[in-house]
Image (cartoon, rainbow, N blue to C red; front, side, top):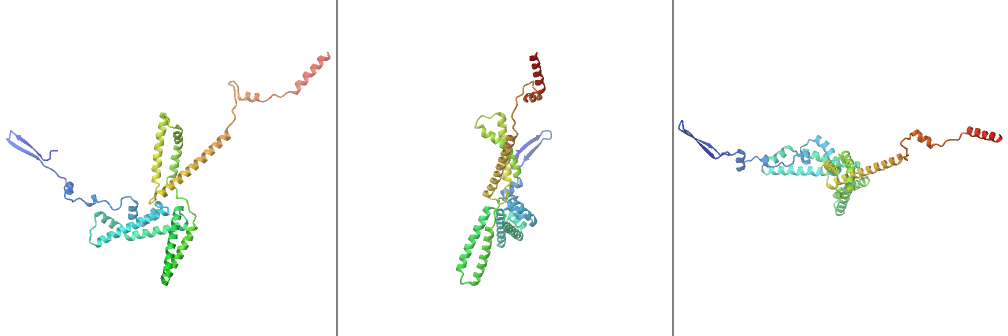
Length: 338
């Protein structure tokens, strides 16, 4: 606050005047900013966002990448997206090579990326992903959408090869190569047509999501039956709990999304999980209705002073004794004779 000002003091005993000066102070960072001398590392952003799939793919070792691709990209389409990311990283690295060949210096972020990533390592990772994709197709672990995509690609490839064969009648060597390519493509087409597609892989947190949905089911029923009426305090608190459960379900569903998973594929997996939960709830309701129907008993009225033994005795009809009736008949005969 006192920068750029001064204060005058007068010592009358010594007859000495003192001037205290408060200078203006400029920080070195501000001065460097005015002179455009800021560090490039602070201003320039890294080429790959930290923690992103592309960054983990580029910086991981081959062994770590092998385990990571199995858990993070279980589907064929996700592995295809990983292949696209690796190709993008390779082209980015090649462009930096061309930049250095032309004598253009790299920025600090470009230099860090160039020093950390190797083109040979990326080529090894690309070959590994291709191998996993081929093995997944041959084993039949692909969905209906992925199978349709592969069949369309093979059909388009066959059309192109057939057109090239018809145009290469005068070139025997090229014609022989094209026929070999056509034969391999037809074999791949027959392989794909014989595959039975499978359902997408389950959500990672499906058990927790279904548990939360089970807790939310009675609250949803209460909201549906309220019909817009004014809720009580307890019902309002229950509705607040329902909103909290909905938020938790959304967070868990978002965390189940894998690398390079498009919206359609992810929503399809969500819908399959919700359909499985609804089917499970219907079977539980049917079982509960059947159990209550078999256990219902007919109520019996009992007076306050009546015990269980008394009710059982009163319900049974008394049996007539043959001995007493015969004695009474004999007495009546004797009286008549007198």
